[in-house]
Length: 247
Length: 351
Image 1: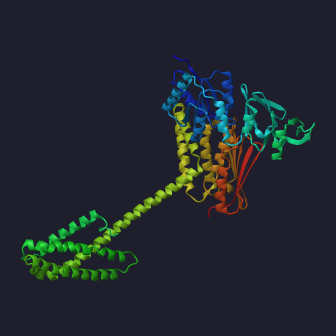
Image 2: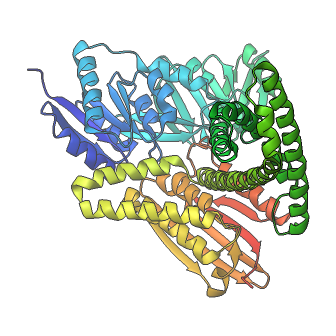
Image 3: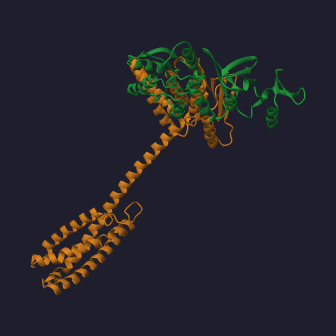
C-alpha cells in the first residue's frame, strides 16, 4: 500500500473546486490537503505543505496555471483542468501529467489520476524550469516578472523594473527602491525581456532604457549610467556598444 | 432533361403503361382479325407512339399552364399537335402493316384499312392524354423542387444564425457553464436545473433576437443580463452587476448582440482577472438624437495583455462602422484599474 497522494485543488471557481472534491472522494488513496481559489494560495500551499499532485485550473486572476507552475519551479506533477483546449501544447511542453477539459467525467478524472500515480511512483521528474523558459521565449517578450518569496508572490510588470543585477545563481530585480531575488541567471532573464527596452550594459547589469537619465564618462574609457533616481551603474565597453545601437 | 426519358425506371413504367393501352386497342379494334395479327400490328405501334408522345413534354413546357397564359390558345396548340402526331402515327401504321404483310401474310393491311379512321381519333386522344400526364408530372416536379429549395433556404438561414451566434459568443463560456451544471447536479439539483434553463433561455434569445436587424435596447440589456446571470453562477459573489438606464434610452433600436462582446470582455478580461472580483456597471441615457451606452468594469492594471483583448471591440467597431458609416461610435479607455467602453448611436425608435 503506497502512501496517500496529497493533492491541492486550484481553481478560482467555487463550483469547479466542489466537483473535484466530490469526484476525488471516490479515490481512497487521494487526500485533498489544500483548496486554493487563486495562484497565490497555490504557491503558499506548495510552500507550506508537502504536495504530491496539483489539480490546476489555467484561467485564473493575476496568476494563471502556467505562472503557478513557473513559480513553483519544481517537479510537482500537475493535471491541468480547463475549458480551453488551446493550452494543450503548452501543457505538454511543461510535462503535465494530463489535461482535463471541462466538463469532464468521473472516468476521465480517474484515468488522469491513474497517470499521476504512475508518475509519482516512477519518481521520474522532468525538469520544468528550463522548458518553461524556452516555451515562453517563442511567445514574445514577457510582460511581468513573477518572483516567489517563500509563500508570497510578487508580480512585477516589466515597465516598473529599474534594472536587474546578477548575483551568482540569482538575479536581483530592482524596482522603486525594492529589491527582489529570483533564482535565475541574468542571461536567462535577459533573453525573456524585450531587447528594445532592456539592454545588458555590463556583465552584471541589465538596464531598463526608460530609466536611463544620462551617461557620464568616469575615468579613462569607462562610463557610468546615471538612472533617473540617481543610481549609478557601470557600463562595460561591450555594454556601451550595445547602448549606442539602441540610442 | 426530359423527366421520363432521363430516368430509366420511369421510362420502363411508362412503356408498360403503353403496352397495356396497346392490349386495350387490340381487344377493342381487332374486329374479325386473329389475335396474333392484332398483337403483331398494335403492340409495336403503341410502343412507337409511346415514344412519339414523349414529345408532348416539350409542348407542355413551352406552354405552361399558369395565370398568365391564354387557355384557348394552349388548347388550340395541343389540338393541332395531337392531330399532327396522330396523322404521323397513322402513316407509320400504314407502313408497318404493309411491312408485316410483306414478311408473313397476317392480314395486317386489312386490319389497318378497317380501323384507320378510329385509329386516328384514338391517336389524337392518346396524345392529349399524354399531354395531361406531362402537365401533372411538371406540376409534381415543380412542387418537389419548391419544397427542396424551401428546405435548403431554411437550412442556410439556420446556418447563418448559428454562425452569427458562434461569432458573438465565446464557446468556452458554454463549456464553463456546462461544467458548472455538472458540478451543481450533485450539490444542488434545483440550482443545476435553473442554470440549464438560464443557459437555454440565453441561447434561444440570442438566436431569436440575433436574426433581427434591430432590436430594442431593453431587449439587448435583457440579453446581457441573462449572460451575466449565468456568469454569476460560475463566479459567485465575485461578479456583481448594476444597470442604470432611463426609459427613453431603452426604447431605442440597436443592432442585436451589440453588448455581448462588451459584457463578455468585462467578465473575461475584467472581473474574472481580479481575485476579489468586482461590479460591472451598465448604463444608458438618451440625449436628443443620441443614445449613449456605457459598460464599466474594474480590471487589473498589471494584467498580461496578450490574451486577445480588443478583438471583440474591433469586430464591434467594424460592425457599427458598416452600419452607421464614419460615425465614431465606440470609445474605450482605462484609468486606475477601471475599464470603460462608451457606445454612441443615433437614437432611433420604432415607428
